[in-house]
Length: 358
Image 1 (cartoon, rainbow, N blue to C red):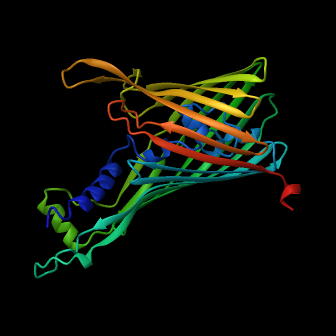
Image 2 (cartoon, rainbow, N blue to C red; image 1 turned 30 degrees about the vertical axis):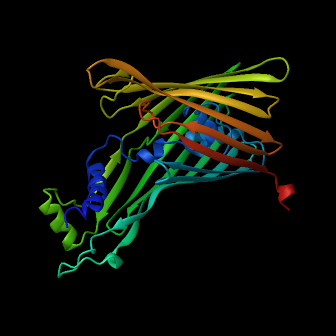
Image 3 (tube, rainbow, N blue to C red; image 1 turned 120 degrees about the horizontal axis):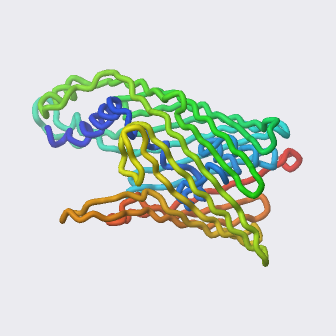
């Protein structure tokens, strides 16, 4: 019985563990949205210029030129076990403000529930196996506005988080992000404050007596209703675009992620903050075809022999824009070069005007 319940117990224990520790909470919100940004290794808080800005930096929504902007993305991780989906919609309110709604889902479906596989008499009945879903959702509502100061844009996102593990555990959360962009001559700068107010997830558990007995029998603590917190994170960025002859262009962006939840395995780390730098490039031809690449997750690692070295996550991407329709592709890794679990990411985007909608 212990072995049969091990997978389900592991899922619930994981949820309980997250509820106790502030570091790495709500990590599904760190993956990113849009194949363009993922191909540039998440270096996007400055150059983002579409509906995905609601996630990356809400100030970037003001770069949308049309009345409406819609985007969709689908990805699969770990050989298709986990599915990651995104949808975004943005509407220009007037010449100085834009509103958007973004939805993210990361989930594992059809997980076997074997808690009732063996009945009270000890008989095995495979018809008693059911399935459940463990999924995380985020609903983000963003608003951006130009300020009187020339070149300065600001924005904010309110996000509602729903995390659910079948009927066994669930959480509701709320948080706020804030961002700004500033244009100075040929340079552009960005600031993104994620979970600026600290994001709180309130977890509740609904465990059967049989599951509680399994926790006791395996020496695990029975999880209690609790609160999970996500501490603030700051991202600073700078970008510049160069235009060359023959309709060629190059845009480069560098970002620096500042976390404040203790030391992480980053290049720069201290008890107060850890800094994780990453960068990306976008080569364009005639604003029609784009080649993208970036580097991310630069970490010092120690192998089994005790030898120290460095690991790095390279990402690549392609993009095509035909009039107001764009399709983007990114090839990304989970960050461990020795495992090399690559994922293919596709996203589409379309610009719409009121006159064309009617």
